[in-house]
Length: 200
Image (tube, rainbow, N blue to C red):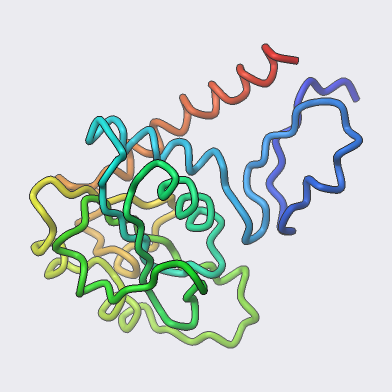
């Protein structure tokens, strides 16, 4: 139909492999539980703006790791850039080989706390967490916020479940970079589209 590029978000992992015969750029806007490249790039941009470097930063990704394409993309690339990356959250959502820790054991040492929402749409339907219990055990509460390093930042790929993975008033707190991430997403995605169209 005359498209110069395709931007596709799909429920299947690796959906793009069946499109190898299409001779225009395909931008992966998220594939199932697999990867979310543009989110990872905007997260990296936000971290670089904040700290000026990646090497040696400590990051904990907290939440539904198993079903999160954001976690899968970031865990890999952040390690390759020299960051120390940890994951935490419900054991039901633990990803094997992903350096799992107890959130409370590491929170005071982290430079970046990245929170994830529970991916209900990617579950089998048998999980049962009340919002209150999830927040108390795994969420960024006011008490946990007070334990963060002075220079630490909070991130979240959004949409946000307020008072679940993060206390409502912390979404726009001094350490939050959530809206900065959203802002940077515009520039990253503009750059990606420009890059593929210019190099066609």
